[in-house]
Image 1 (spheres, rainbow, N blue to C red):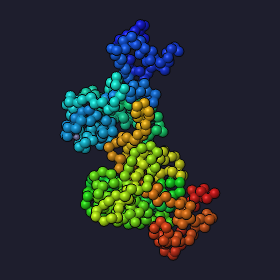
Image 2 (cartoon, rainbow, N blue to C red):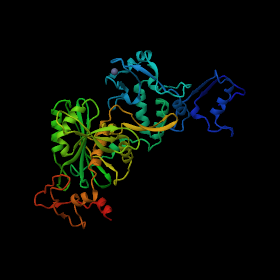
Image 3 (spheres, rainbow, N blue to C red):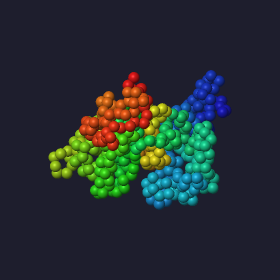
Length: 474
Ligand SMILES: [Zn+2]
């Protein structure tokens, strides 16, 4: 970088993320250059431009965050809705990156790249923040390259190669192609890692599980449900994830949910477990239908919830009563602190070894690649409001139902608030000595309403000693 002596009215600084922090002990080169324009404070123009680098260290990111954060919105050729072209909306058939196309978030149409020229012609810059009132910020990625320069398909292929070659290459790709800063590893949960570490369960419900809960996400045409197993320390096991098709405004899909909630799930040692608590997210277009379903089932542990953002809000708060229908019996509506729940879940997803908080996932049972994409579909970002940093959860993908289901299943566990010591005593297989594999049957009619049915002779054979339990008892 060359600094011209004397004062200037117009200043152009290119690739500022590459500048040194300090020039010859004189300080920040950007600040130094800007000082030279001080004489023309009222009519100066400063142009700062760069490919961004690392998050929180990037000069251009800081400058952009101060600005009104404009992004170029282009119209969808199908529905006409204006939206920025974002990488997470680019899709291609597996193994065919050259077929990459853009998914419209509004109408879900898949837009082939040949529409790009017309879309770019009719686009507009849209400010996404108030900013400081004097800085105009513009963000463009390679996704906006004119037709024939750098195609979405080439970009997708380069992405796959970079991903294959490791984090350093991926960082370069993210910086130069997306024009985004790189988050150092550990800050985001990687769906591929979670998918790769799925386990083979020896039974539908692995042995350490003590309690089953369910979480339900309500969409306009379906319910998505996760059954989740828990033990002491809130170590969790994904048991089953499924989509029940049907409009929740009508009864059939709810009957499917009834069947699912009434089923028993066999644990490795033969114990038939039932879902103890279930939380259903009532936000959205089908609130009345959720209330109608939940009302007669609250006595059986099925509850309606409403999610609320905000730091420090507990995962589950005491219920408020909602009227439903003509009867006086209210629906209890529980508030779920979604920011807190997601923060805890994402921290747990980064846990490396089984133990308290660790999340297990099975091979099959609905835990496919799409599941993990949805589970990791959000991230926490720091946004500054009037100069103060504020953490906020934002979607990085259009679909996040799996994440919502897990939050609901966790809320159901928090509602149950089990006294783990007591549950362990009643439901854990008892193994005083490793060689003594025959255990007494678990008594039925325990406080959590799980049906304990003995298998065959009334004794149950246990395959292995449970190291976790041993650790816990020490
Ligand atoms: Zn559209």
